[in-house]
Amino acid sequence: MNLFWAALIVVVVAVVATTAMLLVRRRAPEGSYFEDGDRAAGVFGVLATGFAVLLGFVVFLAFESFDTSRSGAVTEAQVIAEEFETAQLVPAAVRGRFSGELVCYARSVVHQEWPQMQSGTLGNGHNAWGIAMFRTLKTVEPRSAAEQAAYSKWLDQRTDRESARADRTHGAEGVIPTPLWIVLFLSAGIIFVFMLFFADSGERAIVQATMMGSVAVVITSTLLLLWFLDHPFGPSGLRPTAMERTLEQLTQEKGIADESFEVPCNAQGAPLTRSG
Image 1 (cartoon, rainbow, N blue to C red):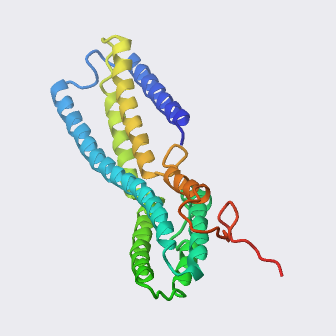
Image 2 (cartoon, rainbow, N blue to C red):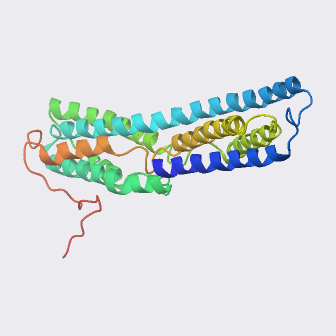
Image 3 (cartoon, rainbow, N blue to C red):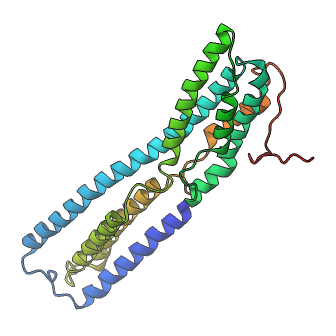
């Protein structure tokens, strides 16, 4: 959901809520439907406070998930760049192979996994190029001290990369369960209905409209914010900026690699088909 649709939803809900209040106000008695205003205000305070506390905890949970996905994406891109440097110290037989597979991994994250996370179809599988690099790793036979150190470092970086990928993908399906959404919308609906009983024909229409409209705007905006945080990879959400920057470094900055290497995938990260 982009900002235009979010703003439109807020405006529509506010208009509907304000119109409902003004329609109810026409037949409302002076002083509202409540004979005891203090008691009604106390009940409304309990409803509003309970809703606000619940909403606060849920927003905190959703923001924590959002931030975990964001930091995971940044860390994963950093580890890929570090692995590319480490790949230049492994045995020459697999050096170019590792370099090419790292480029393909970055491309697949940007062009394949990110759209799948946006649509919620990524699943729980491994990245295909991560598996390819693991198979390449099993063929490595380090001999010199530098190669052995690079081999050990690669194992550590592989663990860091998989951990960062898990952080990045964990928020793709959302962390707020459906029952909690139901409770939030039910609570918002109850507050809306309760507000209608404050309709007062003796009070000016602008005051009544402002009262209902402000409550509708605040509640609707907060629920939309919660939806945004619960879907971090939506149209207005996180972008693969860090991985795109790393990919640009791997493909355009030639100073790190000792020699040219073959990239076994196309620009979208899909494996190249070999003829013959």
